[in-house]
Image (cartoon, rainbow, N blue to C red; front, side, top):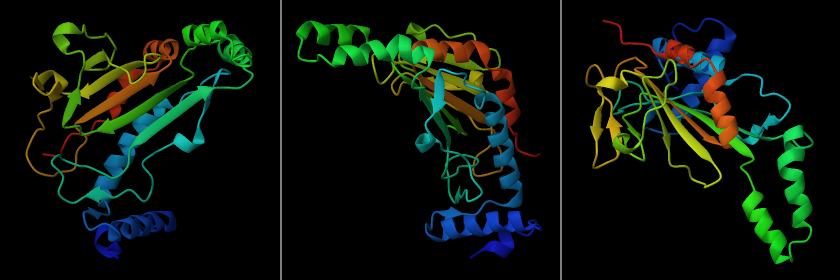
Length: 248
């Protein structure tokens, strides 16, 4: 394992273990390698900035699904030849569901469950289809994104005003019950809109691989009232703290 070269700065046992884990993961995939000390510091700085924004108290109505919790861990590995400054094999993602027995559960789910007990009644089934609402939401974070899709396209889709975000749009959701929003942090104002692909193409500061986090993309999707609440209440300005420009 290539622990000596990439973990020279890891003096404490916890740091050494992190390097050993990363080296082990990289050894299983020839396209991956352990991060350097500098890369690890930048990655964890980005991770911590994302955490301080999205990992807030969710209140009594929601609870996190632990099976859908993904993060940048000690065993993170770096792609050897990415088409962007820095790319890794992990991402940050959270999924939340309505807490059983909560006020929101009683308002939105309990009546549907009661109606479902008489599912053979066509009238009941029609009411269920009409009154059913989204019961979850997802928050995902990515960095050094090459291209960000926006559908409907900007000419048919007024941007949202989200303090801190360079650009923000509502986009088509996977489900008719959900709302989906994309928030773009970094120098997306200089990105090129590619109408044929339906994406903003990001322009990195220089070619090749280098240690930097030049952009962050946040995806919010799920129950519309909750997505709108997150847009209003989270301090999205702090997401910019996760950006890390390349050293001169």
